[in-house]
Image 1 (cartoon, rainbow, N blue to C red):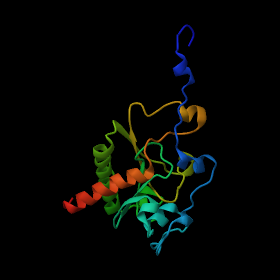
Image 2: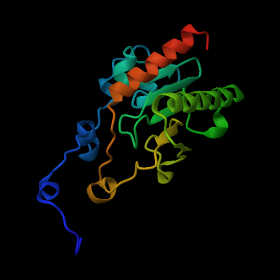
Image 3: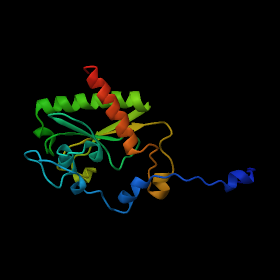
Length: 193
């Protein structure tokens, strides 16, 4: 900055932000769904759909599944936009809103509400982006299986990294967020909630 005085210590200090799980996404590699240990796929599932494989996984932690019931699946996004980024999906493989049953509609909305409250309690975000991309042209990376993104937001969470380097900085590991959610869900279940 012209005319500003800076001391040598500030000028020479270099900070590193490590986000090693992002490199696979950046270079186009993906941890394929085939790597997940799965049991029997549900009827109507597609074996190349990572959400269908998550629904049938035998290792919820490795698959980043934080919640599953008879209608809904919730997983941490492996390539998050922000800390705590979740995907909430119908358990069955379904790519059209009008194909969801009323029971699935209700269960999905209740799950979205539950996890917004849970993330508010655990991560204290200042807001959320919650959205659904319908069709590849609209941004759906997996157009055959509906899923809502739940992205916690904080006032200072946007910075120069995505613009200059094509990288998002996520301050907490997926494993740490999985642990927080699993612990709180276990407490809620023990309390009958």
